Length: 217
Image: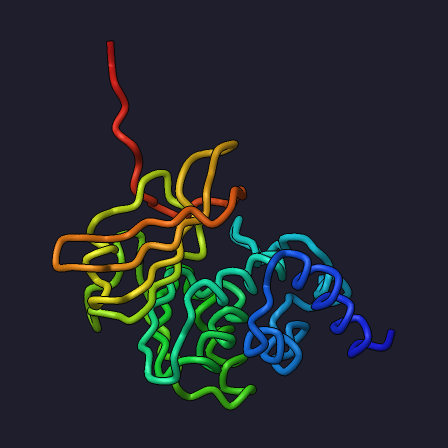
């Protein structure tokens, strides 16, 4: 298999048609080797338009979702980013290539240990991995210029939104199957946020994600 040809096809046939036109993002997808972050048993599927199982009931995002989320955050080289859910660490690597610092919180010890090895192998020293439950955000290190949730949440906790700096951006998939939407939330004031719905999708929820209140009759 000509891996660079397959990578090129992924970008041109999956990513671009999904409205990812930011050249910085497209160049980064060519540079950061996605196959290095996929579990070895699924390496042949590294460029397929699908979620890849990681174990422990978790998944790696499809390539187009990774690209679209990255584009929406409009990261600057001086930004500090919070990632909730390290998973495969591929998105962590992409974020670290675009921002000054990434704090990535992972609940599964095995994922954290593997992610540290992968990031070190790629020479990424500006990503700090934390062990813990980030379903309500990660106050240590707040506020952040950007936050991304790698699992969905039925409702978005205000605690996460308040961890954004003024002008900070948050990418999150909100809702419950089969109705979920990707949101880009921007903090525009001390107690004000602008919410833009980007697209509909479906994504496995974060462990311990905040739940909507249920009415009991």
